[in-house]
Length: 202
Image 1 (tube, rainbow, N blue to C red):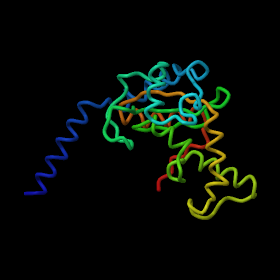
Image 2: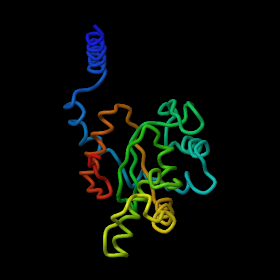
Image 3: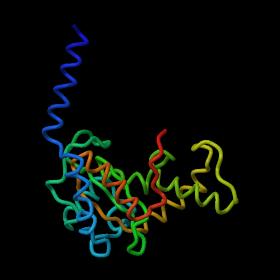
Image 4: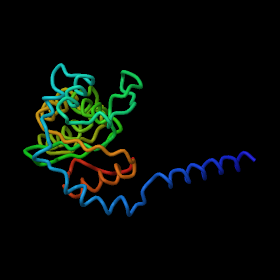
């Protein structure tokens, strides 16, 4: 009896989801035009101007809104230290160097994620800095870092990279649909050849 009830709940969930989600073809067939409409030269902006020294989550959000880098209607409830407040948005972001994107990421809280990338205090929060730190380590030592994440010296190998990232530019794209968000990240990464992205399973 319980198994049948669980089965019915799952089937209802699937029916609801199928009604509100676009088909795979509807999503991917639109990716070429979505990508073509991203103007990296015109719409990218300085990370340090919005997320620099002394700038926290609330300050960054206010400044992004004031300068029309994000829109009020994008914001929704998202838990990031302050609790469940309407203070972040779901979407995709590109790290850009000299008008050339070198990393694409997605998050349900993009503003908070950027802050983690450049101000995170661990290998698990400042993940992009960690990835670049691994490359730096390999170039300097001539061999890949073969130990655990925590055994890579955060202060020596990751902290300097956070400073580098702070001096880059970023561009945001608001996307609410989960499937569209995940698939478009892969599409953009392949289109741009962003080597820092990987989609390996754990």
